Length: 273
Image (cartoon, rainbow, N blue to C red; front, side, top):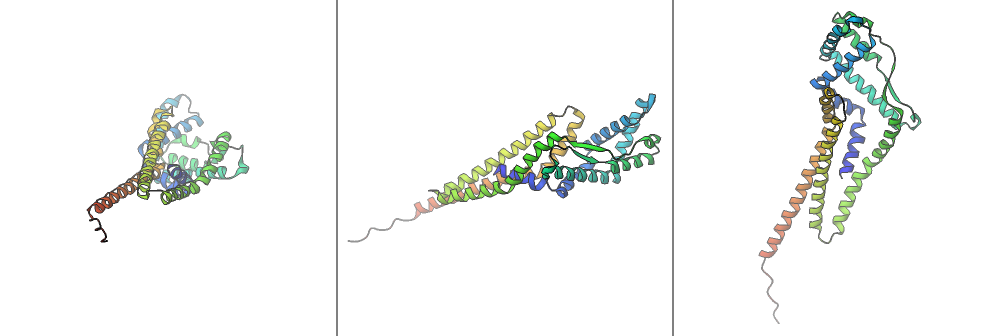
């Protein structure tokens, strides 16, 4: 059950572009994400533009201008457009076996043009020197694509069969059990345990993901993205816990009630000879 839930979340949640963009959209207003974007974009602008001796003086102004840009509607449009472009490119690479041994790249020139226009509107003369070219930006290297493609096919297969198999085996086990009430209780407890283990795995995954980043300034942003993407998975985990415990408790209470009722009923009188 926990593996089936994980596979279904990945196949039907993360792999759906519309749901992915809708999940990521609120992060455009997250202060940690905005700070990481401003830092990254600002560094990228300064790396492409030769500011000469004034580089150190211009740097804070560029970062401040980009941070101000992250509070505009234009930035939110660019954020959603970028997420959609990147997600579509990654999905095409994972689903198309003919794209083997090829890196995933996207063209972010339209987004860069919007950023340049916004900076120019703030009378930043340096913005005119920002190049806007149709350059392929690498999203995933070729070796990562090949490895993830295999995992994606496994998840796509498991997303349907694992949950179905869990239900079938649970019903079959209850049907052939010598004491069906105990089997129902055990199934409920097992489901609750699986949900708890899945919730624990999500929490451990967050710690490992954030700890893997060498830049401490971007760790809060990575944590915010991880939390947004795993919201549905965490909800499903606790739902398994709640349903499992409810089923187990109901089965145990009904069994106890049945035993008490059986003890209270008088035994039948002996038959007369």
